[in-house]
Length: 112
Length: 112
Image 1 (cartoon, helix red, strand yellow):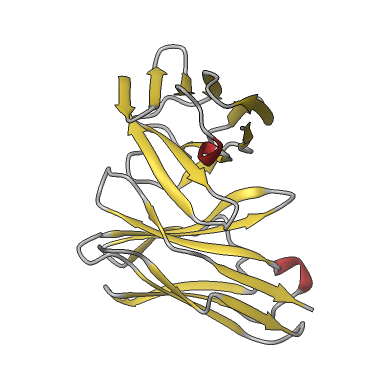
Image 2 (cartoon, chains in turn red, yellow):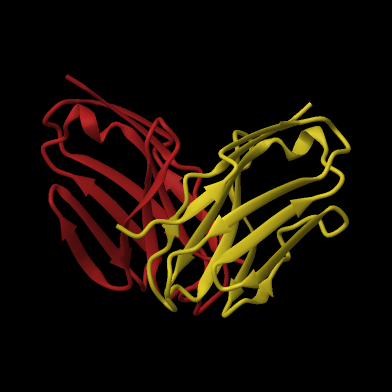
């Protein structure tokens, strides 16, 4: 079964800073998920990526399948980006729309 | 705007009582997941279905938990009897085959 590790666990930064959150997993997969959980508790899917890089607004996600590593970047960070960011991978090798194994999450606070 | 819905949003019950949580997946999604989130363990997969058939329920305590999909528009998660350690937020998510997962708002369960 996949094991997913995230770092850092907590991150506090000033508005405007470039943010990087890292994720590594142990079992080869077809796609990796990045999720965002706001203080109210709702979970939103940010990205699902299987190779290279994806960009949505100020968010960028990259993945290196060979190294089993992914990063989530936030450019020009803003206080509204404050949330928990969670990396998740299919629990078993080759899984696509399969049950996910989650990292512990990165609690991000952006101060004005 | 299609969304996953879950009921109830909050449930407080006494130990030993039966609890039933319901989920309506997004129309057309053929995969439905149940996850549980606690402070200690984070997010964990309990069970998931594809085309209403259970594919994996290895994350569920079999003696007290059961998950079903009586039809394509309803998934249920039942706990009988409930215990204080079952207190958590239970999320339902749905998705197309090999696609992103869309999370419901969650059911916050407190067992006293």
